[in-house]
Structure formats: structure tokens, C-alpha cells
Length: 355
Ligand code: NAD
Ligand code: IPM
Ligand code: MN
Image 1 (cartoon, rainbow, N blue to C red):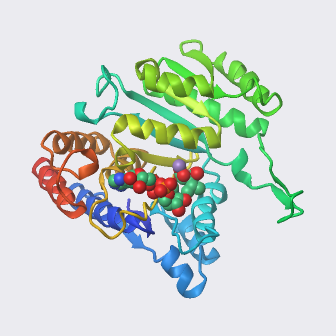
Image 2 (cartoon, rainbow, N blue to C red):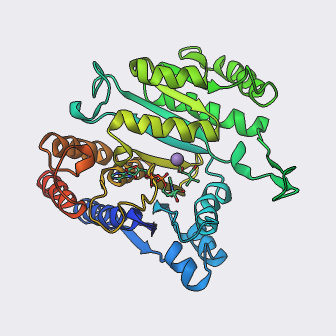
């Protein structure tokens, strides 16, 4: 069986890290006979500025009909202040394919990378399940009396029973299938008494179906503190769209920065899914050969596991650990190499293992 992978480098450092992640996909495919067929797509700010194209409906449909996965670098460019292309591309996939689970592992891969005393690879290892199709991201709302002193700006927070239940269930199912024994749900039900009362009630209901898994409720402000004070108590966190966005940048800091955080956007049970590093296009770093490609490599690892290619995620992760240890890495994680040289060093080690 072959798999067609749509590859969208996008903007800024997305272009540089996806070039290396494409090399990794090609290497794995050739060495392990995975039958991956990469389809490079010219979408992003450059294309938008050139001809106004964001996400052509025909391309979206072709991806839906023929692809197993999408690899996205990052979208966002200061020359497009409306962020229209990014919204159409990123949210086009997340909402359009109903990829309701944004799975973001927080695992520290090197002693040196942890910013916390007493915490590192042995005890920073949890996964955030971020709701990915609802909440404040649906863009229901509007502006009234725009530009006047009486202006009103509204973004509604949309939480459906179905949407809340399925992401909470996905987190418990993940815990169950990955040998995890605890799920934290982070909300703000003490203040948001409609929307997050629903989260708390559904969390308690769904938890009853998983008697072997400890269900812990935490207000998100306290959970943010726990993440820094004692991340070892965390295994799986489930939360809403916006809180998940914020907590996973904080989580990235526990991994050594955004250059070390990968993510998967999935609809459990469906093959087609979107894979992207947690970081953005980092305009100040773009085009300088300094971006860390490891977040995109870890993202490829998540894709390999999702497609059922066992052992490759661990192989990628193990190789990154070795590179970090040997300081064959970019400056953000204590090395001296550029993006290309880091990828070269990684591939040299990987090829030695793949044979
Ligand atoms: P960012 O993640 O792009 O960068 C923040 C900082 O993190 C960078 O300045 C850099 O110091 C560090 N960093 C990020 N990735 C790195 C890497 N691979 N290697 C080394 N250091 C790295 O966040 P931002 O500056 O807030 O956003 C820039 C643009 O990216 C905005 O347009 C934003 O909307 C967009 N964005 C897109 C995505 C996405 O496409 N999924 C995600 C986040 C942000
Ligand atoms: C992320 C990003 C996006 C989000 C932005 C670019 C809209 O920060 O994937 O974490 O908020 O979801
Ligand atoms: Mn984010």
C-alpha cells in the first residue's frame, strides 16, 4: 500500500524545516519501503501575494480524496496582516476535515534542555489533547460601532456537547491505549459557568467509563503553575482550543523550546490527518539557516505512528536524543550548527541505524 502525503512548507522557517522533514520522509520511505509519495504544494504567503490563492477548493478535495496525511510547516507572514491565507490553510484543514484532536506531546529529550531544576527526560513526559474545532476559534462574533469610542468586539466561545465529549473521550482512550493512568482536564469553570460547567460535567461522566484511570480536574491557571512547579504529576491533559494553544507553548518551554515540539491534528478513526510542528513561521529567523528542524522531525514521527509504521517514531526520537547529547544541533538547544548541518548530522546517525 502506498501513501500520498501533501507537503505544504508555507512561510518563513516552515520552508526550511519542511525541506529537511521531506528529506526524512523520503529516507524512511526508501529504506523501509513505506511507499510514501510526497506531493509538494506551493501554498502560503508568497503564493497569496502573487495571485490571491489561499487554499483552492479543488486542491483541498484532491487531498481529501487521495492523501493519507498533510505535513504543514507554518503559516504566517508580516506582509499579510489579515492572516487570511493562514486561516484558510490551517483552519481549512482543522475545521474542514474535523480534526478535532490536536495531540501535542511534551517530552523532554535531553537533560540540558529542561529549564527546571530536578526535572528532565525522566519526569517531563505528558501529552496535551487540545480541542481543535470549537471554542473561541470558530470566529462567531462581530464588531459593532467599529472605530468609535463605543466600539464593541465579540468572539463567542462555542462548546457543543458532542465536541466536548469526543475530545475528552479521545484523551481517555489515548491514556488507556498508552498505559497512562491519569487524565487532567483543565478549564475555567469557576468563571465561565456556562461553557466550562459543560466541560466539567462531561469530564466527570466520561471518567466513569474509565475506572482504571484517575480523572483530575484542575483550573487552567493552577494547571499552568503545576506544569512549571512539578510536571512529573502530569500524564495526559485535555483542554479547550485556546487553553491548549497557550499551554502547549508553555509545554514547549519544558522541552527546550518551540524547536522541539511536534503535533498531530487527527480525527480518531480517520486516516487523513494534519501534522505540523507547534511553532510558527518565526519571521526573525527565516532564511538564516538557524531554525531547529527537530520539531518537524518529531512531527514526522507522529505521522509514522499514525500511519501504522511501528518503531519509526522511537527511532527518530532516539536519534534526536543522540544529536542533542552530542551537540549536533541548532543554537536554540545549545549547539552551533545551522538547520542544514543539523539535518545532515541527524541523517548520518539515522542512516547508520536504517542500514
Ligand atoms: P513562532 O513559533 O513563529 O516563534 C516564536 C519564537 O520561538 C521565535 O522567535 C523563536 O525564538 C522560537 N522558535 C520557534 N520555532 C523555532 C525553531 N524551529 N527553531 C528555533 N527557534 C524557534 O511564534 P510567533 O512569533 O508568535 O508567530 C510568528 C508567525 O507564525 C505568526 O504569523 C503566527 O500567527 C504564526 N504561527 C503559525 C503557526 C502554524 O502555522 N501552525 C503556529 C504558530 C504561529
Ligand atoms: C498553533 C498556532 C495557531 C493556533 C495560530 C497560528 C492560529 O498558534 O497551531 O498553535 O492558535 O492554533
Ligand atoms: Mn500556538
